Length: 344
Image (cartoon, rainbow, N blue to C red; front, side, top):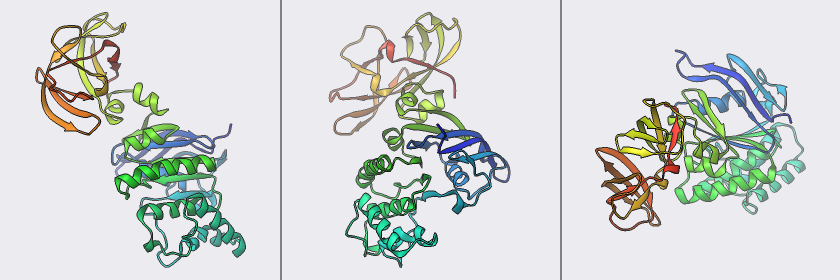
């Protein structure tokens, strides 16, 4: 199957050469939603601009539906783009904003009107076509921007932090709405976000950037359950990253104490990095037993259904997430909860 969007060995370096995108290869299938995350300055928005045509790569190829589009103009690429600011025309009505891409492409008035009406119905804004953007809420403006991006039936959709300006409650609602619309349109989509929950809940695949390089791609559960290294583990979700030294076939010595692990096949004396997700750590009623450690609470965050606790164990920080409402003096790490990672 031909990819809707494909980058092969793309490099774009800003002056100085340290920031940009470097040797990046990524393909997005028709109908697939790929979410790209990474620290600030890692190149997420640069990636969008390279695909959209605002920037031209210094090396590598950008293909759209199998066609080399590396040197094509922004308009000729036929991509729908939604930026963080929405960029709606304040003097135009909602209907006129949505129809604008068709207007600049020379579509007849009747076609523009019909398509705008269909797009407003798709995003749940039918009946609001005559309003100006200033009369809409932030969530409604975001829907207008999305409707406008879809109005001319683009080859793919590029969304750069489209939900970041919304309040938390509206953001969650629009997250689900965005996924519904994307699935209904069956359009290849790249979404840029800094919100990990957004990425994990929306994506068919997650792509993680670090310093302009793609470090791992995969389904959300694969990224979370089998991170490529300590950087990915620490960036996606919450993580306890604990250094240690192999002391046996199923044992590692760590600052917490000796930790029993699944069989690992590593050599005695080898330095390793262990990943223990906070939700996998159990509250223990008493000392004793495998991987049971005495702890002290340093920070207690009550979140309603759960608690996030920062603990100290022999001077080493340990995070847990628990349903327990009582005091926490001992914790247990099930051996099957311990993973071995490559260092970041």
